[in-house]
Image (cartoon, rainbow, N blue to C red):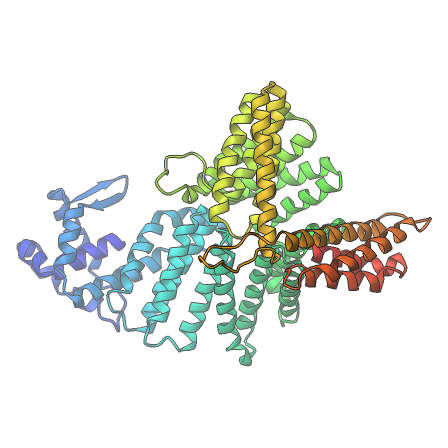
Length: 621
């Protein structure tokens, strides 16, 4: 429909088109102006016949090719037609295409039966919307129509295709369209802009760009809150949705306390609405994330997490949401030792995802997550062959999904620079090691090693996790070298591990103020203040020792009082280290706060002291 309308409008109204084909259809051009007037979006009664006429003419000159019901225009003809238009023609034809795309775009995120058809027109929608900003649409309705189409195209790209970069570009284009409108201060455009910022924040989170995600979501929340005086249910729902996304972001950053606050506030807003049943699926998603927090806590609250997930499952109606809850239930039951139950949950989750995405989208990141868990479960049961198949399937999908993260200039490389790719490579190596395929294990671990070294330069949000992964990687490489009897490699990997550990210590030294930043008379840095570093290092060790003693006190039985005595001794040692630590040490305030909390609660009964002491241990960690 879009192609027919565009070809008709361009050829009939453009000067070049009239000059070239006036003998064929000059009498058929009389309706074009009426169908493209800004005030009238309906097509004339003969537009389809007009389009067929032009279509046949172009086919006769081989300017159009039709195959299997789809047509394509010769690129040189397309360029010539575009350049032959006046600005007025450009706006007219863009408007025709925009209306055509809106009528053809049937995608709905919560209706998976609409996903298959959407892929056929996705590129056309993106192409048409890309012209809106430059063709000078002055009508608010046109910009709203184009911007919302761009947002929906971005949602589809992220949700169904895992094309996160494409999705980001669609959202940013929509936001630009809303911001550049002369009516940008009207509520309709401000609301649409907030929706675009909300989705942009979500896709930034998918990419691991947490700072950008927080900025977008916070800006969206500020816009929504300016409308909150009306107490409009739709606005309240949007605020709750954005609070939910902020909570999910905090979960990813492992800020569990702030994540809980965001999610509980979101859940409370939905439950206070007049029609809570309409927001059941959103409430289920929030319960799901609260359960994830229960699992991430130290120690994890698995029973509470399982209860929240089962409650979420009762509210879930969407296929994808139910699959995600099943996947999380499997994670909980694995940690509870209920392996058969976990296997059932994973199989159900996989079936639901396959139903949702279909054969055309079976390489989806959510399916990869299930495959990873199935591999971990099989490894736990020592089913090596089965585990290898699951991890290999997961690796294929993640390589495809995160292809955008391949190093610049090395697009032919197989493995993107992404933490989730390195994680599955590590599991593949462990399976090879368990099967005594040591050479294969070493080769895979070396690939993981390269990815982790690149991540140090590109990922600022997971540095501690990357450091731990690098240490584990070198430990396993050394382990493999021992099995093959290669003493030279054993020494090499051991030395690399020691050097990495020393490098980490030096970075901690700098963060604790151990480095003397003054310069000598030649402007050169003075040597490190090793005394300050040693003092800061001692404070860290004393803090960790006290933390360990506090956890043992509340998590283990203390019939003879020995564990309380150990904690008192550790507190005394920590107090001495605090008094001697440099004032600019970055961990001193946290260590003192931990000491005060432990001193306050340690002599209470275990039922009273357990929760605050464990929380203090988590904060210190």
